[in-house]
Length: 247
Image (cartoon, rainbow, N blue to C red; front, side, top):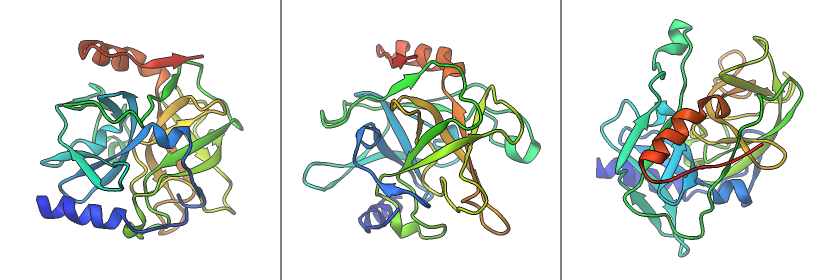
């Protein structure tokens, strides 16, 4: 298990150019983001809600024997944290995509100690779900190109538009940039933020779709946070913490 995590840390040191179609970003979204690693070699992103609480996708913290929250300290050295507790949304269904069932792909991770003061808690949006055409910013620590797993470990952001392939969403939001531009989330971006123009997190990235044999680049799906406020606030309250919410 140690070797798996060590291998991921080596990969995370490799430089890269972009989230598919995106740009390197060191702004507020990056300051409120960490990586979430699993013992099977999986890489995800996470959103800091409190010094010792991280929001991510449920599929990022289920199905493996061990998980670590990862970041680099001010000296550039890797830090791996064993979670103190993981709470998965009660309506998460790991087989939802295959079975075409609804699922809430969210989980909260409690850390045994606070993150450094260089991290800032994200602000979550309690506004109504964005409608088609609204501009959003997707962020994550994933690959720069599909299959290029050595390019994980750099936070990247990408401006995208809300699309409604199945009509307005009450649980999910879909993002796209048109079929002529291959862009969006890919491996390692799950659990990362989808934010509005004010930087408020509207959704948590959970799934990507490509064209043909591609698995990424056509559309990105995220789980809306506002409809799940009771789960988020209830879990954090149990931990003696609270999230920042804004309209």
